[in-house]
Image 1 (cartoon, rainbow, N blue to C red):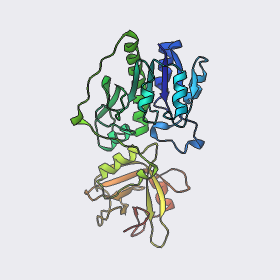
Image 2: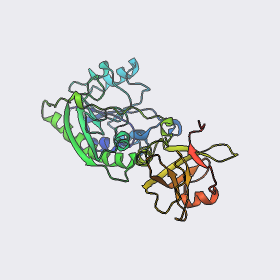
Image 3: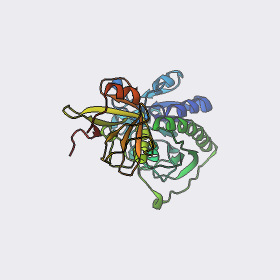
Image 4: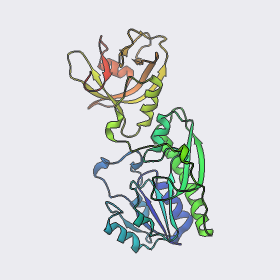
Length: 330
């Protein structure tokens, strides 16, 4: 059986390595995204690790193609030349055309980081954290023209930890995905593979996250903002603007935070985004309309290094009227 891997970034790399190890000379090709200058165009599932091309070059038998789009006539022609029986896809970053899906003789499978039919789309891990899910997982599906709508071959769940970021959770799911992908390919080597239909009534979406998605909405409850901060790590990061009387707004990245009651803090008026300090030395809290505080543990002002709340307060002493919010306050 001739296997071609399609994927990009750290979520795909463990699957590629596992398939190379398990199936040896059966793995004949790799389709991966072109190298991006400085990684500026990468997203959370596009983070660079060892590099898919680097992994492939460790095996002389694996041909590598990196088309801008696999769906162009050139991309389709290059894929046909590999004569694949099975395509294994993980975080490739492009929706495959019907023409591409007709090329492999046995079909195409996808390693998807959610418990389908929940969180179909490009950012399933981030949305699972955003929505306060207690568990997620990996699903291996048969790829069809619909978005993540194919029959389920294998599925396994994992708990979401209270401190998980998209990066840490993806790393755990990547290892699980590699194991399940090997199991699924083994089924194809043994004979025809049946799948289970997804329940359309249970479908939820996880659309692509863009750079501007990271702007914090301080009108949300503190618990929602805390999840948002974790979901935006490592990309695009959660950010806001510091407003100080008489000064221009300053962009600030919020790296880590937790939720607290007002005990030990000066509550004052509950104004969205109002910065609070109090009896706890070095504590930086942001008032929430839900009646609690988001305690910021680590943040990074524009052009500065990451710093603790205590370091931040030393550099930017809190004064009346200081608040976080969008760049332009209404």
